[in-house]
Image 1 (cartoon, rainbow, N blue to C red):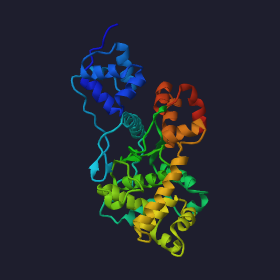
Image 2 (cartoon, rainbow, N blue to C red):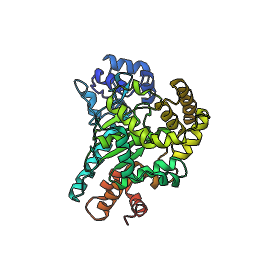
Image 3 (cartoon, rainbow, N blue to C red):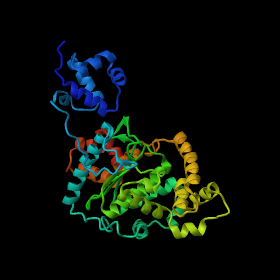
Image 4 (cartoon, one colour):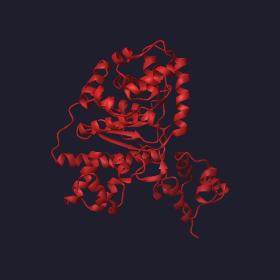
Length: 388
């Protein structure tokens, strides 16, 4: 059987890029660990069939295996993810492929909106880091119509999140929420890698929320990414409510956190409702129902206002995080396939693609590819989206 003259350095690079150990890669492609080691040492060569299976497993084009040096891979969005004072920089194949898929959809949507002579979204980049964060939060709240009545109409904070997304889409913001790469359920996204990102673009501003994150965390990510758009700052975020603001080295991320907390739990309303005679758990349970947010967001607000100390907050956060871990699920729309599809793609984008297909301006197979579904599902989806 013919051998593939692959570059052993590329083999090693591709494996490490996929966060796979030698033993795991050998298991996935159905060979011995010793063989993979020999390939990476340049002491042996895989067959073409083995090389093709390897490329598929580590999610790289087959031709990459024959390059003289690893390709330079860049992410087209500012990477604001940090741990302590260190920038993460490295990205998994799943994350890179997700970004590629989103950017492909974005390019199509921007061109579509230009042809439609759509108006730009006026509030993108409206403020900067010198603006008081309270003013930005108030402007977001007013623009999206987030008031006491809207909160009370939401039965819980999960419904409040869905309502925020609907309001954002009505205002011209494209919101995608998914826990997988495209439509591939075998390629889940890592919460530890990123929680969301924002693309600040005047015509098609975008928010992506990692649907693999705990539901309780997604509402904060949504608010955080909204702040990014109002600042006109694109970026990938992994900021957690379990990190002290003083430990967030990036000034944009730290500022967006402040905006997010103020947006979800306005200081003036919070102080009126906080009861100093109750402990953190009792206050959090009571106010979470009032503000339609998670108990941790309430506790974070109390921490920022010096009503509790870090030790008390961290203890409470860990207890709640344990609950999230036990109940974490992909919250892309329950068991309804078309609802899930809409959540992954966003309402405005879905309607634009479907309308283009049924008006004869886009091939059905191209529409299906953009939406991550099959041609056979388009009729049902179009009816579900009110396009037909």
